[in-house]
Length: 289
Image 1: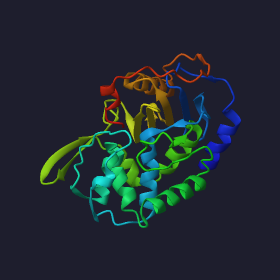
Image 2: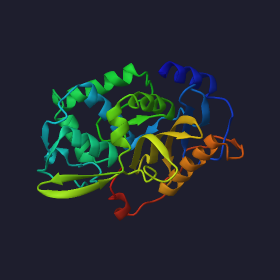
Image 3: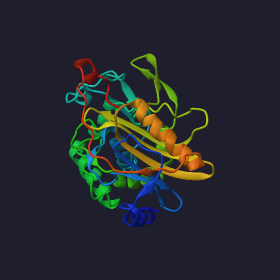
């Protein structure tokens, strides 16, 4: 499957693509069965990928065959000191490795993701080596991942590589299930806490989503990976650097309409990098997902 995708990308990446206009700065939509490129915009531009990183984190953890029932204590080393993002997983909480994985995928929790790297056999250095090996295995030649959460702007890739990552992640039943769970109640330090999926389309009427991951940092903008089914067609979409949640959701809706044959074809031209609007200090403190 990965070979089909790679071959299709090489043949189609520079061709004019007809689709509804996309506001995300990088877009790639690939038909799963054939590897045919349906929509392409700046698909080779290397940019920060924010929490899309967590799909790679999940694959590396699952590849290690670690005990998912083993208890992990969240400690201060898991707290985000780079972006100072918030988390609803308190320091001192003890959860299973499987619960940490679910929170990383479903709720994009950064402390949960950090704990998976910290408790990896050999620690963060060994985790980073495993990530590098996985990147090489998948042929993601334009990808660099330095840490497990996506908070670092040095975690970079392009839409073409991320389609490969999504195809690989979709082979893991745990990732498909956890990333498309709508909500989960977990016990944190004796208290029941309800967590939700960061992708509001998961569980929404009319959406058939087989894989999902959102991402956001100031550098990356709003990002999204999904595998969707519509009108008997299965496709993987990657949206990078949308200006806001509404823009990201509208792009996803336009892609769904395209799959259903509802969108009138228009020539889409690649555009340059989006200028970042100034953000207030309160906006910068918002949780990165």
